[in-house]
Image (cartoon, rainbow, N blue to C red; front, side, top):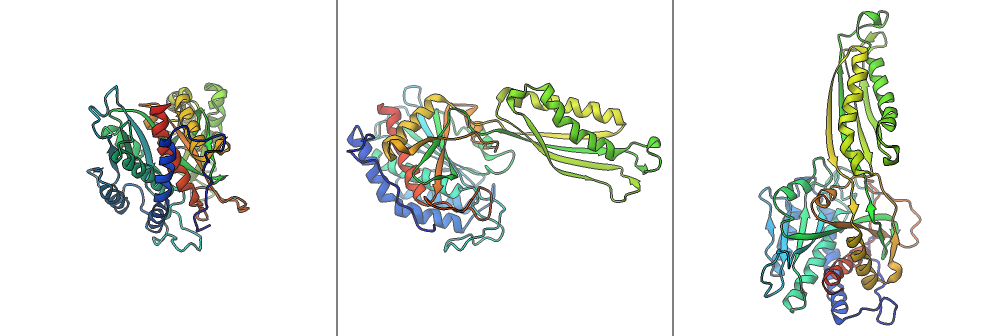
Length: 421
């Protein structure tokens, strides 16, 4: 699995034959770039960088784009960049008549120890690309290089923007920084891919509507006078209060917010006390709130605050609640999904596109979709026949590199489909 797996390309005799020479040329250019992109991805994989520290990664991307004759704009923070590909003679790129189609890649790694025998496994102890961001980066870079070649040949009809975003894996994420810095100025649509280890390489998973969940972080601290467990009536029973909050609030949410929204509060960390016969003076709980529904996400902070206020008051304990709205749900727009479906069918064949289920994982690509329409595609990275169960954010995660070429061909084709179709 450390070798690139060959992904079939739709032939002219297949039902998904390319309607113009433009599409065939995209596949040809992308195919020539694929070996280089595989090596580029391996370099990123061997040298992962954590969120907001992706300086080497950014420099490598910028250098390759500059070699292609492009002018990447590295962020002042040094991590992440934006790069425009503008057709020759384009009078007003980013205008209402000629808006940008944007491709976004996330470039950060995770604090996870890699467990593999790959020749290009991570050289950084405790850090690896366990979510496939190195693959995402190679895909968007390859699509950009392909379209830059078309632009030089006078074959590109619309401007395209590449967004290489830092800090997707933290809250608040880097998408908010890019939006605030104007990365979406003049953009009419944005597309992205995300690795899917449960989908065979050469396939693309698409879904209209909510694809991933909103994800918020809650951190609760309780304070009381403390005391002896023999006299709980003379103090505030902080442990009982904490237990009541962590059990009653999740249940009450299903009665305060429409249960069809599927909002879920799950505690991942609870701490209180150090002795069996002493009521502690402090306690804490931390967890996440997830939902696929935008309205429920908007309501959740006020309702959670109200419920915890009521329970804490009942037991006479003071409390502090830090509620961080992390990311909204990724809601794929129908027209953008249709564009990806057309592009994937033309670039990879009509059987390449499959339906993909919703995920309760969070993804800060959602912040871009709060501003402009767009869609995220699930990119198959499982080697056909591989029986090992792999998942994202695990040290055993491995991506079949044939996914890089598949993603490049799909995104580059989408830039043509969005204009020609």
